[in-house]
Image (tube, rainbow, N blue to C red; front, top):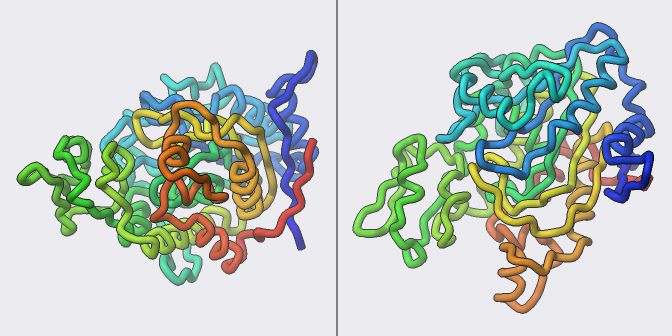
Length: 371
C-alpha cells in the first residue's frame, strides 16, 4: 500500500502563517493519534553547525513541542555528537551551539539533551539483525525515549546524495562509535590533478588523516574514518567520495541505524524543503540554495517522505542565481533530472530508500496529499 505524505506550500495569507500551516498539516496527517500521555518524546533535529545558517528555525520546533505537551507528552530536542572538528563534537560545545542558534527553552518550550553524552560515548546497542550493522550504537537519550519525532532539513549531501529523514534519524542518532561504524567504508579519495595544496582539508581533519605533501593532499587511510569533512570543504573538487559503491553501503548502513532508532517506537516525521543547500548542515558554512523554498511535508513513513521530497526537489526549477547547481548546468549545458546526482555524481541516494523499503521501515510508494 502507498503511504500518505502530506504537503503544504509556503504560500500564506492573513490569519494563516507558516507556523499555523505546520500545525494544521501535522494534525491532518494524524499526529494527534499518537499516545503521548506521560511518554518521553525525542524530537530528533539538527541544531546547525555554528556559522551555518540553513538549519531549521527553532520556531517550527516550538510548534511541535507545544502540541506534544498539550497531548500529555514530555518532549526534548536532541542530536548526537559529531566525528569531525566543529562546534558539536562534544556535549559542552554542542549545547552552546544549540543555544546560540536559538534552540533553548525560551524559544522552543523544552530542553535540549545531547543524546550520546559529554564525549559521545553514552550509547545503547539496539540489535536489528542487519546485513551491514547488526548492532547499531544509538545515543542513549534517543534509544531510551518512548517516541521519536524527526524534524528534517531536506538538502543535498556530499556522501549520501541528500539528507532527509533517514539521514537525520540514522547518522544523526548514532553515537561517535556508531558514526565510525557507518563511515567505515566511506573513505574519500584525492584527485591529485585537481588538488591545489590549499591545506583546508589538513587544517580541518579531526583525525590527523590528511597532510599536504609536495603541494598535494595525501590521505592516511589507517587514520581516516570516512567522515567526509574534506569532501565538503574542498573548493577545487579534489576530495571526492571513494566510489558509488561506498555511497551505497553508507546509505544502507544509515537505513539500518534508522531502523534501530525507530524499533518498537511510535514515530512521525516532518521535512522542511527550504534553504536546499548542496551540502549538509554539519559544516560551518552553507552554500547558496539550489532550488526555491518549496514547502513542508510530513508522514508516518520516513522512506515515503524522503522519496516524495526528492521528487519535489527534482521537479523544481534550478535557481538562476549564483549557486553550485546553476554553475554545473551552465558548464555542462544541460540539467540532469536528478539534481542530487548532478550535484554529487559519486553518490546514490536511491540505494538507501530501496534498502529501507527492503528492511521494512517504509515504502517508496506514496500518495501526496496537498493542503
